[in-house]
Amino acid sequence: MSNDLIKYAHIRLTEAQYHCGNLTYQSKPRGGVTVAYILYHNERNNTLVIDFATAECSDRDNYCRATGRSIATGRLQSVKHSHSFTIDHTNDGARITGAVIDHALSSLPRWGKLADLDDDEVVDLSSTSFALGPKGNPL
Image 1 (tube, one colour):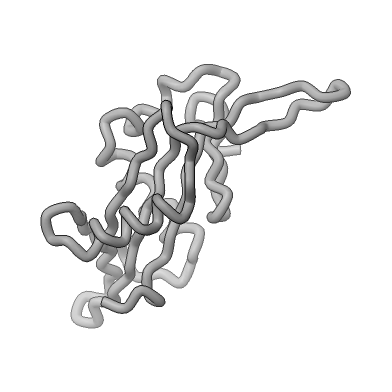
Image 2: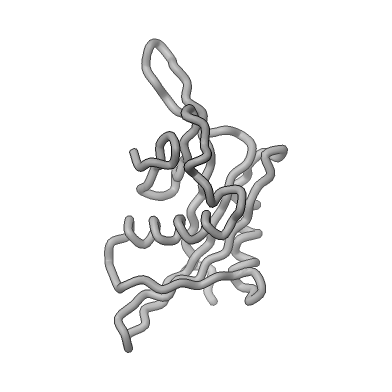
């Protein structure tokens, strides 16, 4: 598996803040999840097979993208720590990334329940085209 084929998503909780009367969201410096994934086209049944692995950063540690990528990539290359799922073939990158994030967060007990987030927390998916608002609802 070539590292240049691996894609990444970095997922972090954010905090709502008011600045000059405007609501803004700031990523929390601690905690987060990095997802490494790779796509394979199954031409026989026209589906995409997606292999993924995660690296979760503790809420006590500063989040580091490089460390998360390294750990998630190592796990993706390991049979023991990687996961797979299949979706219908699509060229819609947002749909693919959304499916990867849904499966990745569902595989992590602490992150699988976005509905339990506080009203002032959102999930920052800065390297993707998705963002989730309070209670895990799309923005």
